[in-house]
Figure 1 (cartoon, rainbow, N blue to C red):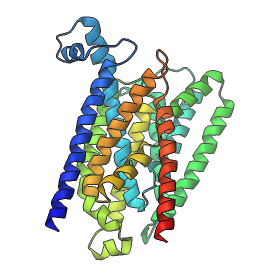
Figure 2 (figure 1 turned 120 degrees about the vertical axis):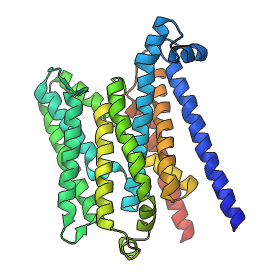
Figure 3 (figure 1 turned 120 degrees about the horizontal axis):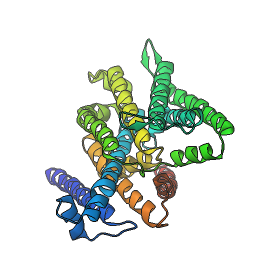
Figure 4 (figure 1 turned 180 degrees about the vertical axis):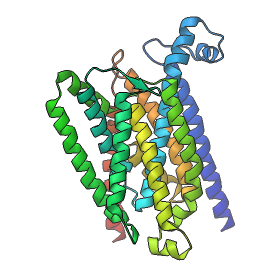
Length: 346
């Protein structure tokens, strides 16, 4: 028994090491590849301030903030996805179930159509980003209010409320698209595809700050999420304040998703696929599942951003298109695997 525990610890340690090394290599790949390829040695010199002016400008002002933003947003999406799946006790749950993505799309569409070509920024974020954040937060608040009652917050009711609010927000977005002109329609479409082309250090700062908060708070609830897998009544019998835990997790997931869509647009499948795959690799223990999901999500989005810049170079694909192209087949494969496993178990 002790040997099995030691072997599992060693295997999990190898997963940490592999993902950490992969993230470092992908970040290095991200800052060296593009329309103007830069050698690894020259990139390292630019990071140390010892390279020529043009290479230093490309690395430090364009590629480095973009690579780090991809890392932060990917980690945010996957971390929020792992917490959402633990909260709903469903390995195929997604953070968009609580309406934040649909609400953000409605907020961004409203700003694009109503503000037109007005170019105004506040605290380093454009009006579209601020509208997306406000729309996502408003949607989550509505979902929480609809699912909350005197006896507590029902996860099933929250799921149904999220579906309803998402449908309502989707119809609102369609209404704005109906009144939009061609330029506005293109801006809405590009935003909904997700992209990291507007990366800068201010956006990186917001994403990193929220990621640090979630990275510090979520691990404190890892044991509670493990207990919640047994059921809400069992978790209460173990002495957990389930209502407070739900409230904290919902607020943190909403904040993480709201910031991610504000700085990078709507990027799908990362919060759904990554935690599910990591759960298959390391098991359902949230003490390891949460940090490993964050690492794997960061790796996936950095890789997706590299592909988005290289596949049609010198043109650039929206990174959300790459994650969808990768995520949708993986999702179908996971569904087939679960179905076959269930048939064999039966």
